[in-house]
Amino acid sequence: GAVVSQHPSWVICKSGTSVKIECRSLDFQATTMFWYRQFPKQSLMLMATSNEGSKATYEQGVEKDKFLINHASLTLSTLTVTSAHPEDSSFYICSAPGRYDSPLHFGNGTRLTVT
Amino acid sequence: EDQVTQSPEALRLQEGESSSLNCSYTVSGLRGLFWYRQDPGKGPEFLFTLYSAGEEKEKERLKATLTKKESFLHITAPKPEDSATYLCVGSSNTGKLIFGQGTTLQVKP
Image (cartoon, rainbow over all chains, first blue to last red):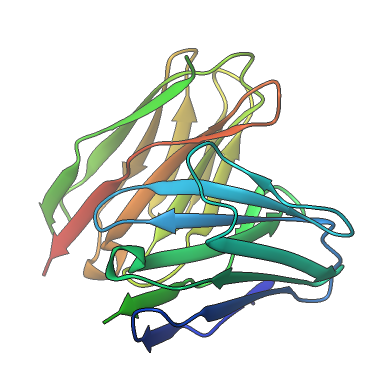
């Protein structure tokens, strides 16, 4: 079964509003979680690493003030897209370091559409 | 620069027509090579981990192999439900994950 839960699975919002996406690790603690963005027919692009109890680490070119990350507890990380614009429309996926043999367990993604 | 390149970008097969997906990599001190399956609108689902050249892993109709430069995902007698995008991911000696672009497989009945 799923070990990482991501919510919502899809969201439509208007330009200028903010949207929060939640990522939860189920039945295990994750001090680190990762946020990816995926464009159609492209692979995953790492946006930032979320660290429980400290600031997130952002990849080069990712706007910290636009994509706010909060690792509130050992099982929850949130990504808030602030003042969303149509170009922020994308598929956002979170992941947590793997258990057993997988390096990462992924959430099911969130399809964000900004109108 | 660490890189993972998958080919082909897209592959169409008839049901039962076996084939292979290729993943070429140049990754510093490869720690592991991973295969994931991604269905449309979903997150990637773990398939295999390979650690050293010569290693093979199997699961149902899929078999993953690893050499010093490439990994192959062999699909034997595929079924329509095998249709998905298959991602190859390399892990470097620093723990960084390098994603391939994926191969989108379509299996027609």
